[in-house]
Amino acid sequence: MKIIGTGSVIPKKVVTNDMLSEFLDTSDAWIYPRTGIKCRHVISDEKLEDLAIEAAKKALDDAGMKAGELDFIICSNVVNEYVTPSLSCIIQGGIGATCPCIDINCACAGFIYALDMAESYSKAGKVKNVLIVCAEEPTRMTSWKDRNVCVLFGDGAGAAVLTEGDNIKGTRLSAASATDKLYQIRTLEPTPYITKEETSIPMQMKGQDVFKFAVKASSGDIRHLLEELGMTPDDVDKFLLHQANIRIINAIRDQLGQPEEKFPHNVENHGNSSSASCPILLDECNKKGLLKKGDILALSAFGAGFISGAAVLEW
Ligand code: UT7
Image (cartoon, rainbow, N blue to C red; front, side):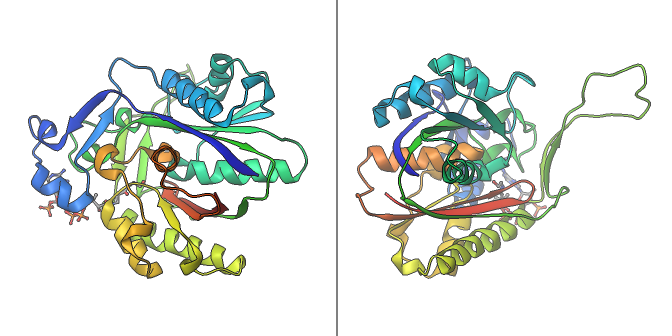
């Protein structure tokens, strides 16, 4: 397939590090040097599904495609207000599409997994035009009393429209179960038969373990995929990495031995927006004219699960 349109929408409420230090024992002096984050956009009076629908419409406009031409919608999302129906069904109605749709939960790596699915469905001859929307609200998963976690995240939606083509050169998916390193637990409705004790736990993270996993998994996925394709990191024009922490991005860059200018980033303005992070960055680079036709892009993301993946494509 090939990506022919991108779109993104971020919430209007900007929360700076200084604003966080008004109610948390934290500071810009701690957050910025350790993460590269200056501010994040947080959902206030918006609804996540509205951001998702708007991002989808922008991507369709960019692609010059009508919603009725879509064959499949894949929505990557960890949590939203609805348990059911799926967010992809809500997006389908919001944009006026009629095609089948599916939600996936691959945490921060959702865009890579969605690209792999789209490419696989296309190769199987089942679809021609696919819409991917990654819409995430991680700021509702964390405790805003926990400085270890809440300072890292921001909300948003990013979308891409794909059609037939041979621009996706390859994808690689990985997973390594590590359920105690990054998780959130919510309780479900009680039944008369539930006897065990249940408690909701906001997002918990062993930051340094996640950091080490992220660097190893992402640089490994990119290297292995490039090798499979008979390419080296030198052949890549831009690395679009999951925006979790600038130090993680820099460590991956060191592992790959590549120059700074090949790694566009926006973590300073968005924080970690889970699976929306990669398509938001892709859209920003696209709209700023940073991507030239024929550029080789390597995308990579990692997150809870642990799950990670990489994709190499020609722009
Ligand atoms: O999509 C994947 C999602 N997650 C990630 O990508 C996170 C990966 N991990 C990281 O980015 C880093 O590990 C963090 C940014 C989370 C932490 O950075 P670090 O350099 O590993 O910090 P640290 O663990 O060395 O420092 C922790 C210390 C603790 O204090 P003590 O116990 O050493 O006295 C924390 O209480 O820093 C303290 N701390 C803070 N202090 C001020 C933790 N968060 C904060 C905070 N403000 N926001």
